[in-house]
Amino acid sequence: QVQTVESGGGLVQAGGSLRLSCAASGPIFGSTRMGWFRQAPGKEREFVASITWGDGTTYYADSVKGRFTISRVNAKNTVYLQLNSLTPEDTAVYYCAALRTQTFGITDPRGYRGWGQGTQVTVSS
Image (cartoon, rainbow, N blue to C red; front, side, top):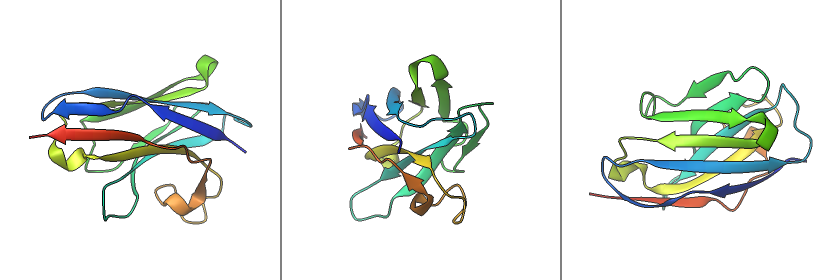
């Protein structure tokens, strides 16, 4: 199955930016959809954004629309998440994974596999 390694997190002030990377390996096809999720302490893992490897179709959570941008470089098997205009509410561990079943829809983490170790994003006020 797909395996992922996330990187690029860090500590940033409110209003700042970060770019996260997700290096993927394994069976990746044009129809494969990759998703970014985040999990804050004491909260459930929540959907952030997703993209398909083939045509680059994207989808965003309302909370990040207009601030975050998901993209991919197929030759590098890497998915990126550009985070702009960060607020303390964006503080969380960010994970990526590959969608394996749409039984739960594309925003439910239960349908995703190949979770990495995550990368911590901390936004100070």
